[in-house]
Length: 125
Image (cartoon, rainbow, N blue to C red; front, top):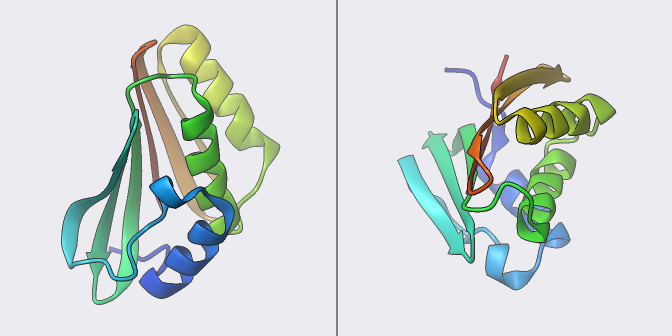
């Protein structure tokens, strides 16, 4: 599987833009692990050989400032900012549906099952 970014870079970039409770640990274990659980947010990374292959943000609330902060931290940390990401998020939440968009070869998929169940996944297209 292709990687999004190396662990140290995303940790540094992400942690610069989020509150301490959402910060990624200094090191990430190999495999797929939940690295952060804070309020309604869980952050799960898939890591192989020090490279991040997938990022999953789960939120127990579809619309919450913590989700926005987390998503924007990864969006900026991966350098993929694009208004299409916001539009896809809005559509997913509004319609309780799955939406996908691509920015700079990163596919972002939103799955909203209800007002209390939102998942965003980042992976290489």
